[in-house]
Length: 405
Image 1 (cartoon, rainbow, N blue to C red):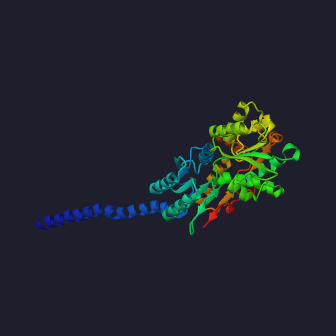
Image 2: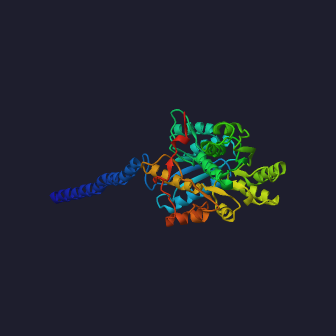
Image 3: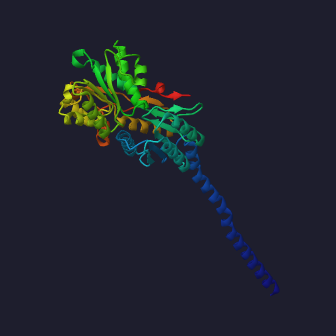
């Protein structure tokens, strides 16, 4: 009997031992299983991170976008940029932080510093001045954030890195206006000009004035000195071109309207035969002033730049003589292409000038002009009505427009 009991005890103990071992077995095997699952899940993440240096395709980005003022030109480019992002599945989820200044250098610097603090993936700036931009580029470089300049040519500090620049050649814009002015009055050319700059001495405004004067200079006309001297010193011109008034319309219609009204009052209807009014908003004010004075815009050479849709109508009606299609829509589209290429780790043209298309009252209906309005631009873009690819040779190299210290 004692033997039977002993045998039973041994059986029970063996069973208990087997049960305990069986219970421990899953615990031992589950740990490696978790480690394996974790390793498998983390592998793609690690590969994605490696691919995202410098970029990861399809990864959401945050862009800090600063505009120096609430200018319709700056706004139009920005709106097209947003539309291009939305239209592309790879960039549709990008976030854009928009800041608008009131035309001061300190606001630009503060905006860039805010973008850096926020930790944006790229900074885009329509600058206030080249000098403050140099400081902003330094700060962005130190933070490891790519800096893109738009519209106005920047100054890059020594050792600094500018990831991209897109802006028109404003000197060439002025040349196109000057060449047209030379054909006025059966080739006699404009003799008494009112120059309405956006802001006296501002880079883009001075560039347009310089270009206009260069056209006369290259044609062998007496303008009272070199084109550069006359443009910088705002002198009165020479025998072939007298500049009867240097004025500033602040890029807006109302200030320009007052300027032109004052000119008409001071000089009279015969005191000038042409006006170079350097953007379409100012031209709007100039036309109003001329017509309200009882004068006919068609009796004068009136040249401008921007080439907005309303200017196409003015040209057809003969209310402006010529304009240059210089739409910021192409800038916004080019910016989208640059940023996408940058974050995909692809090569791209770093510094470009979009193409210009001059038109006048005789050929405006024959040309395909690029719209300002974002919806119209995107429709034409989809239809292939105009060149938008920054790799096309119509987009020229803009390296010479930038100041590298």
